[in-house]
Image (cartoon, rainbow, N blue to C red; front, side, top):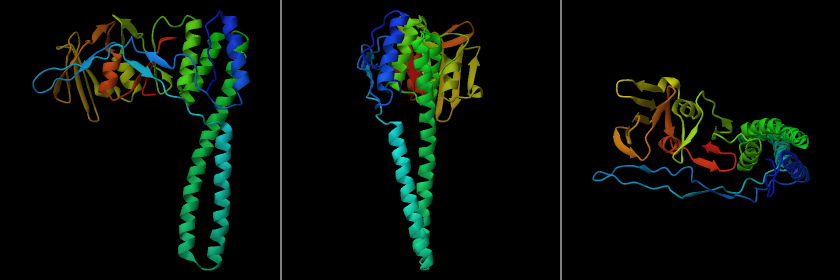
Length: 304
């Protein structure tokens, strides 16, 4: 997790110098969350999602809501290493107890000890995997610092995106947003799912204060297979059938069908350049995914 504290956007050289200094000073200390913009206003997501009751259609306005970003984890490489050492010590102790139990023909006790060792070995495997990831992140941090020192913002952006794929933290999204803004790469929203940016031949757009994204691209990113997405040319509607979800969404209308029930959305989907564009929050809610918005850098995260 990259450490940044109260950064103010200056020209590239100033940003690189300030960010590098902060990263270097805090690199070996515990992670902290950014002090600025802890609460992000979701003005871009002034979308209303409503579900009709048996008698009337009710709406749940989401205007002027805030998305609060909780404090990030305080774990560190050192903490993981200490846990690994602790588990190794436990395994060694149990192996000695196992040997003693076998010498005394205490086979039931030996069986119980063996199960405990197996559980600890599985835990150790997970910790080692985590430690390897942390080591890779540490190397990428150094790489990011080097790029920032030389004012290579684009390269620093690429490095931060690599870190996000390994550990998609809110602090890193905030830093990425600052770099996007500095590099003037925030003309269109950037949509991320589990640390990976969604790529499509049609960019996400903001229309009337609302964010729209290509349906197929975001559906694929959250695990929906292309075979589950179909286009009804006659009725100008898209359908998605996967797992427990069955969605039928005509374009240019607020009336959709979800699992056989009619529902109303405030903002309809529309078609552009051969792609169906859907309101981000609406489709995310239909799939039960959380959505966060980072104003600086125009970053959207789904499910993180």
